[in-house]
Picture (cartoon, rainbow, N blue to C red):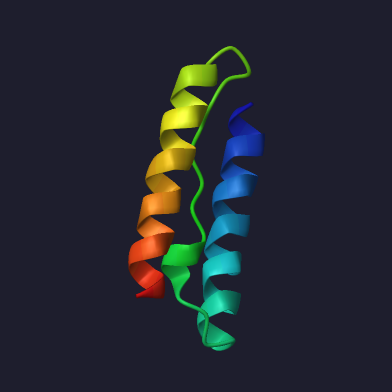
Length: 58
């Protein structure tokens, strides 16, 4: 898992760079570590992200 997490971190940085180059607000991209057994955490994170996106839109 360590190598996969490292690779993902690098990919996430690249995604942020590409979004910035395209003029897209980087706050529209977010990643969190959530286990398949953490349904309530996933739900909370999605609700928070939705609120953040709504604020960006305004």
